[in-house]
Length: 132
Image (cartoon, rainbow, N blue to C red; front, side, top):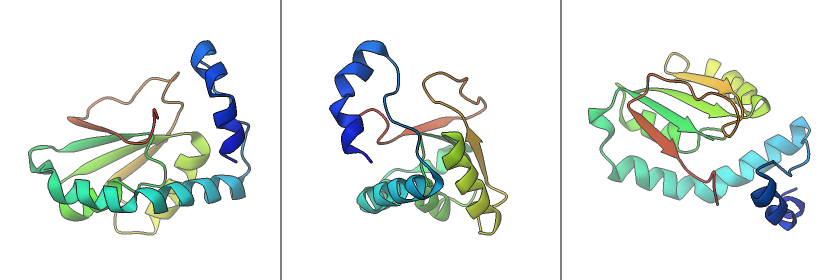
């Protein structure tokens, strides 16, 4: 799923348009799960090493399935968050968090980070694995 997109990266950079084809639900799940596996250790390190105690609302821009967000919220219980990702990803996050411990602390927003307005009201923004 990923390789064909990277072969068109130059076109994306020149045109400022996405070149990834639409993914079905199973492909979104596979892609986001793979990214989560690759980034889980870095996410845990960030939650452990950066002190989020001075913040109250975190915006995770391009947050995927919340791989970075979950360990941060687990360590900093006062923190609330918005996860911003494509609508199909945000829908999966909404479904997952509704049944979990972060249901009242995470709002998933479906939008295109590059073209849609970014939600306001946050005092810290996390951008991880969005612009490679």
